[in-house]
Length: 421
View 1 (cartoon, rainbow, N blue to C red):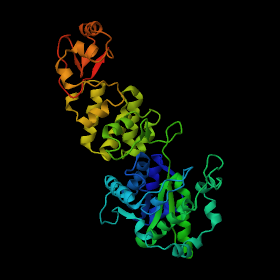
View 2 (cartoon, one colour; view 1 turned 90 degrees about the vertical axis):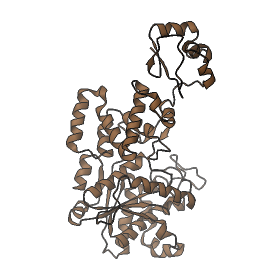
View 3 (cartoon, one colour; view 1 turned 90 degrees about the horizontal axis):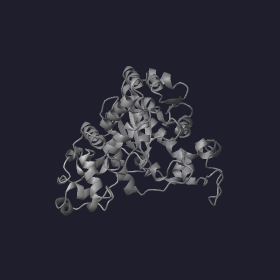
View 4 (cartoon, one colour; view 1 turned 30 degrees about the horizontal axis):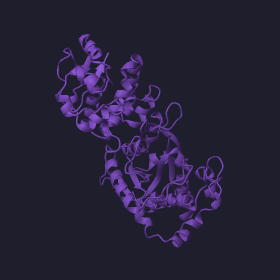
């Protein structure tokens, strides 16, 4: 059931032999995904893997979210060409708290057999001595096995001074050991939570299979564990998905506002929207196909993008945040009430638009024509005559309201939005 769901949504990449049978015969299966707390918030790239856990729980299994308080101090080399900066424990703890709050919006945490569980690998690594780890864990995997992983091979060409080949800076022992630590995470969860499945993005295959191999070796061949990976989410042109023109799209509203978040999905390209709505929403197959058919009939209405943006914004933020984002969008593109926006949303709406500072005193002492010519230094209209002509021809609006009288005072508000046509 789980794999079939992931396949039609385009989320499935690969699984170890026997995974489907294991999911069908052992219910509920405990499966985990790890999240390194290297930032104060998760982002859209993480959202795709969160949805793997969501579908696992919906299929009647138990999701385990591992926050890597220990491995986050090292950094995963997968998909990286350079060493990651190390974070201190205080920063990591703060990041973990934020991540937990975000995960609770997607997963049901309770004491039922399918209730989600949150664990932190720092809890079992903090008292694990270096020599003990080498003796009890490290001896079970050879260097040859670890070097064969793609994430290591891509970095191994670097020299000791950092002048590696192919843009690589080489790999430190710290990052080289990451797969061994992640493998032990799987073993620990296998022993203590009966966790028999690890999931992740396709670039995690090497680390995940290291865990299944370590479980086999540490149990003298008796332990059986499985791996399942999802597709990396990329745009139609093959580039990585999850960044806007201003940078990473975060789930934390303090880092990416609900308005910016909503706009990011709303502006998805037509060729990307069908895949994104399957990955990031819980809409059913029939409903999505109906939306696609409607979108095909009138692409300019952006039916798919609107449905996608609505579902994801409500899930990540709230319905109130979604409604505020829609209202803000209507202000920018006409028909909305500017005065109804709070200050933060107001600044979001007009970010990147040409702006001129006007003091309240200047606003109170002038009329519309003078405001848009002399007061603004001719940056809107070069002269009063040009401004007056535009008003008399019905071509000027302030805050969405048509201006008909050149001598009328400008609106008294936090912002004047002038549009001419």
